[in-house]
Amino acid sequence: MTAELSKTQRSTMSRHPERATYERDIAFSILDEGLVAHVGLTTPDGVVVLPMTYARIADKLYLHGAVASRWLASFDEGSDVSVCVTLLDGLVLARSAFSHSMNYRSVVAFGTATTVRDDEEKQKAFKAFLEHMLPGRWDDSRQPNRKEVAATTVLSLRIDEASVKVRSGPPKDTAGDYALTHWAGVIPLSLTSGEPLPDPAMAAPPAVPAYAKDYSRT
Image 1: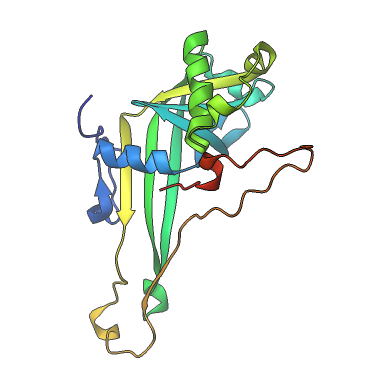
Image 2: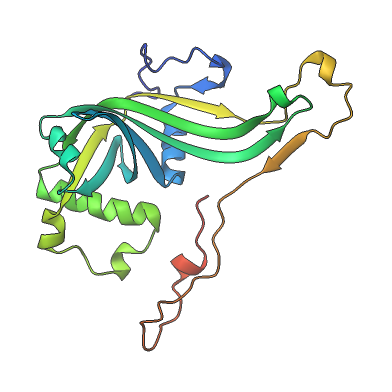
């Protein structure tokens, strides 16, 4: 596995190429911090984009959905997809309305997603999905039973052809706008967790586990 992702025609950025990187480690760190992927694919009904949960194991990205979803049948022989994960880090307020922006980190991966048939690999993916969302939860929950596994389609996509784009720092106004007196700067944004709320159906709620009480995405 090389240190850099494959740079192809569709993964090469034409707009703001200075924000692009193809470092595999940076891509992996963004994927590991994110929670929702937007998956673009072509179906008999046209091009669709679907939000999906995901997880990464080494250089593979795993996605899952219900077997009953008719669009998932197209992956039996493999299907080309694009997968986008974006982290929003701040609102960038410039002096000029046109120069406003956002600080963000994003990964767009391209490739052929295929259905996972191997039971052992599928089980590892189920664990990865839950541990990606909440590390420590897998061992503190009932494992998926055979019926639940059979009702779920798991897809895998090798992370090789992808682009990473990062914007950080203060606003970039044009030279003539720096003399204006409008406030300019950055409003930082981050994902934070609140106080865990116990399920009211629990007769005697146990103590909140540390992985829930101290939850953080960073």
